[in-house]
Length: 373
Ligand code: GLA
Image (cartoon, rainbow, N blue to C red; front, side, top):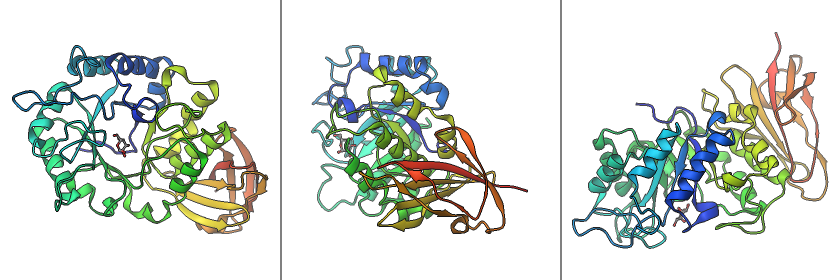
């Protein structure tokens, strides 16, 4: 069964809420998905990260939620998410404890997978902390991958080992549908830039049902919440989103979707940007140009023969002209192409050979290029 034919889209509690997760927050988030047009834009998974758990398992070994946060248990919360036409995700860890010190699934893989399936879980983020010494992560991810499969319920398996031991090479073989390629993102331009532009060598590993995950979005956090570190401008958030769309990255929103600004909502729901991310060909962009002066050019081939292009100005102070030669994506210089601006949502015009837009500081020209004739 193809669980993730295109990059998974959803929301995860960690970036903004950390330990402040509870039943009401999950339900209110699911309501906001519907009300704010996120569901319509394609976002599906509402995922609770770490700290939903009770510090102790039940006497019979079952995992339990924190009763103060989830007084009626997890099942009814999952039901509420499903009733809104959405999918429900949860978090656990390969080790004896989760990263935040709650009970991990080590030695309880089958039992926990059955518990998750019984609750109606559709997505499991599986972290990499407190691994017993000498045991490889890959083995432990395989254990949970098999346990999930044995439940018979389709559950998207999201591996979170921070890019250690090259999970892009073995993630799919242990049943994973996406795997983190880096350490944790924080809400700052430096973090976005460091993570986003380091993905250039991984494009050949991504495709339908197997996605590289450069971590969740910080769009719309504005320096507030669990991973806040200064925050970014709307221009920077738009650049972040453009790059993640081009990278065919999972689009897991990290802000409080109950309270999005109009700018945040416009970024997260732009149908043309999302169409690039969700393109059925499933290719991840590669870097096609780079200069210390003007920045970077990245290109992602699309199923209809067009090419999506991101021209990034990494200079935070000056607008720069970022040159893009069509030849760098294999389009002959006599061939005319329609250039479309994804953010303006209008055609720039028909051009030959190249295009060199002026790009604002930390900005990005996000384009599609469609050869004519
Ligand atoms: C790790 C992960 C994060 C988050 C926390 C929760 O750091 O990489 O994404 O899940 O654990 O404790």
